[in-house]
Amino acid sequence: MNEKMTQEQRLDTLVEAFKADSVQHKDLQTPADTEGKLRILRSLMNIRMPKKLDDSVLAVQDEYLRERISENGIVTLSEIPMIRNGMSIWQGDITRLAVDTIVNAANSQMLGCFVPMHTCIDNCIHTFAGVQLRAECSRQMNQLRIKYGKDYEQPTAVPMLTDAYNLPAKKVIHIVGPIVQYKLTPELEKELTDCYLNTLDMCLVNNLRSVAFCCISTGVFHFPNKRAAQIAVSAVDSWLSQHPGAMERVIFNVFKDEDKKYYEELIR
Image (cartoon, rainbow, N blue to C red; front, side, top):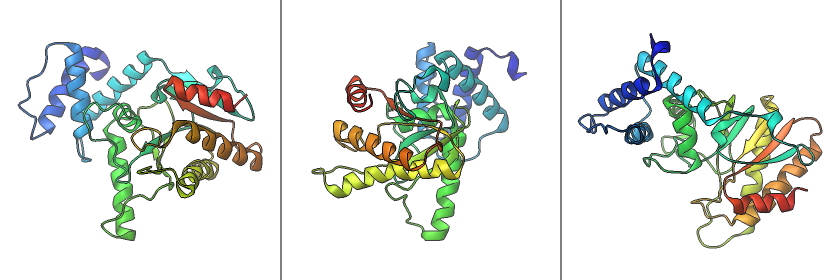
């Protein structure tokens, strides 16, 4: 039956289902316009704690998200030119990339961004992957808490691998970047280097041959953009030289024109 539903019908179904799933917002008035419904749905997905969702609702969610992503336009590896030594630059929405894995700039709780409609990459990835992603992250964190104690948080530069669910990528690697609170230090620079090296090591172990890195730590973690780009390119270039043939492609995914300029200056 779900295959016959239009996107508008799926959206209506999901808004009402996610409202019903939320004790706090079950009486929320649904806007009449599509944009209003989209905001409500995304917001309810963003704040939803990891728990089981009815299978029939999950099926509608999956169909809805895959259609949304298809409408946004899926970008394949062959459409992204290689510049040097297996490295590429691509500007745009990382949730459109059909690569082996994309990299998510996560926080130490590893459950995604709970701020409704926030524009951070963590929020975007979790929104378009679907609620299954937060649930898997929660399962992995619960296992780590059993091992390391109930107060465990994911350390900086330690990657976590999950499925990508409704995203065109096969997997997502979540990593916590360093936070610059006062000034940049050699320790923080080393931690950012380790983010790239450890992610590539995880790709190698899991036979993931194409990866798209976001600009780790440059947003609310306040790492200076230019220096972050220098560290990223240097770390990746060094790793690729030490592991010839291990990766088909490493993509630096940028969103801002500023970051694009820095990477273009570094990769010629």
